Image 1 (cartoon, rainbow, N blue to C red):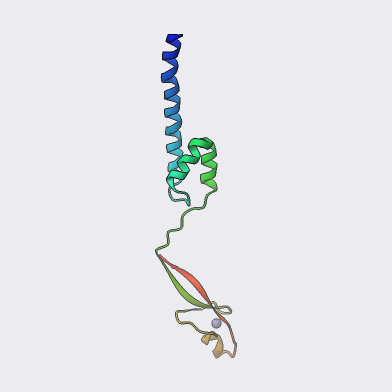
Image 2 (image 1 turned 90 degrees about the horizontal axis):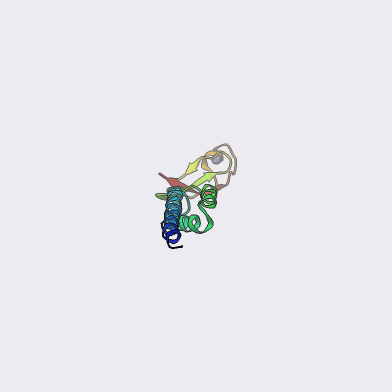
Length: 108
Ligand SMILES: [Zn+2]
């Protein structure tokens, strides 16, 4: 009983350690995704790393956004204007009243 108990404890500790290590490694996969490292780790640790891999894979990839700018795009010719306008001036030259809609542009 005593020998068994002494052998069992390191074995349990080892499996817990390797399980935790696996969870840590899987959680690393969350980098560059729309999931932070700690929540990925918690997910891997409590829901098994297998589930963690699937959850991370299904999560969206992070889009790095440095700046946003508003541009105004013509609905007909798709020309982008920096200034707000009700109608496209380029299409207006052809006698068309093309609406200009504001769009969100990502600046890298
Ligand atoms: Zn236009």
